[in-house]
Length: 303
Image 1: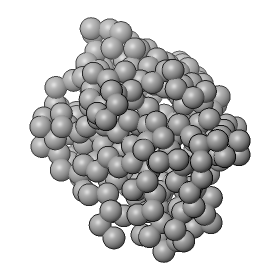
Image 2: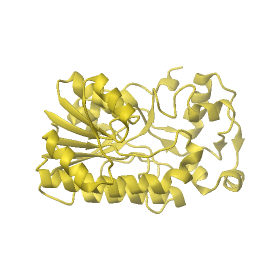
Image 3: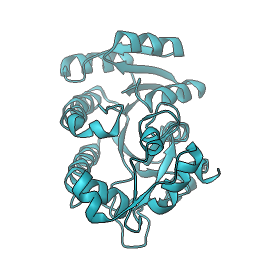
Image 4: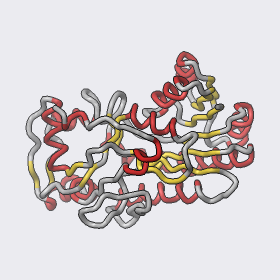
């Protein structure tokens, strides 16, 4: 199958391209960087050097690729989570405007299926329940979380706006593994090493993670599975009070401190409190049933 991957050199892009090639697909990877284009070619993919904001160039590249399926993994994220406020506007612009160019080009080019990166961690579920694919994005959350949720809601609305193309929403959990924030020596791990992350209040906010390579495997499987929304998360949705101390132990870091919601709100803002106390974990039952997917256990819970 001929597959066009936008964001092909990002955290998910590199393992995804590798998995698609391993399965025998012909892959065209879209990037804006000459150096990253060379990396894609070294992997065995064809590279398309295109600015996502140049709509005619995006459509021309997509038509040249003769792709049957487009995978939209466009993001503009910082290397350090603390820099997210500086990147938020640019990230939204790339996903909405750049991704909009890609979606319209896919529609005009007769692409059969469009896979769209979405979120499996900003979902709203009933208290004590895991979010499933019918759960809405939490657009009434704390300010920055709500803004991100609204962006993902727009992406999903666009994805399913046309009956002419099969839409697949990839509701990924928090990525961990090589070249992600949650990897030894990377940004979130370093913050834990430096005791910059506290268990907040009772730490009851539930996080769903997914290993970057498991996310790639599930995404590749969705080239042919039934379209729709999929939560691509692992089997271990865990409250912050569980996963954060376990992650610290896995890293060889000191035990994380405990702080009240009021203290954290004053120091780090409402969003930090939301992540620690209000996140809803997600169920992966649909993806496991339909794809036969077997994500690995969250590695620091095994430590």
